[in-house]
Image (cartoon, rainbow, N blue to C red; front, side, top):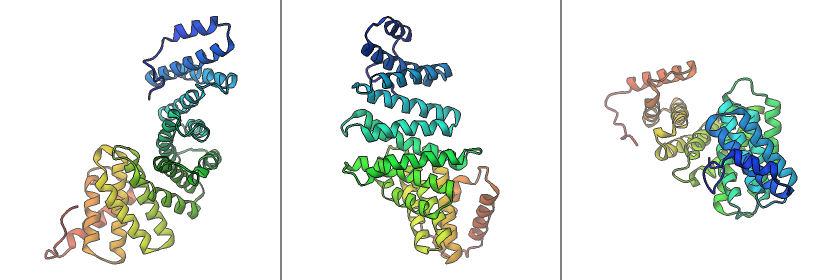
Length: 328
């Protein structure tokens, strides 16, 4: 993260001295904002909790004392980035919520051409994914608080789906709201949210840039959302969509995408095998087998291990004279 675009970490002692000895309230607010960003940069580098507290307190005070100052967008962004960093370090859903509050407030209120607004849109997509991941997989998450915060996020960002915007902005908004609806599904088990989240990701994932880490993540979650939606609806067309999304995402992804790449193979294997069970076709079994390949030597949960074993047994039992297509 870059907290202060104009240069490296500024001298905290110097800024503190200037702020303490300034007699001008407006100047103290500006110096406090710069000092707050410097403290948060120190937190990012060293993980110093006292630096985090100092940075957040100074930025909040600057915003309260100079709400119309031109630097306020940088202060909003700094708070959002600071809380996001703390959420990552501590696996804290509360800090992720706070990050989304600041980032979404900046995204909604700032002018379209504002550089900090563009940065907030990019970071919100990343933070939305990380927060969704915690809600889905982290034990002990306060579901009530999480649901309140996801509703607040949807209330802020959701209207931007129908507001005039350039295509890049719309892609970011769709990714953010897509993850938010999937998060809401995880918290409520309401299928309508699952369907809405899948629709939004399907409309955005392919428009993300090739170097955007969210592309594999969003594609992986799209496959799983469609797979879960098929389990609810038993609609074969939804299962077909899941498999198409899995194959397409695999072509765009690589092992450097880490856990998202592994999950993509897990979800893709499950979707392909499910379709093979219902209407046996060697192509689907071969696809499931190839999706399992990167996972064979990794630890698996019992359900995954059973499914993988079933695919391997079925694969070995295929007649030798069946000609399978080449690997994609």
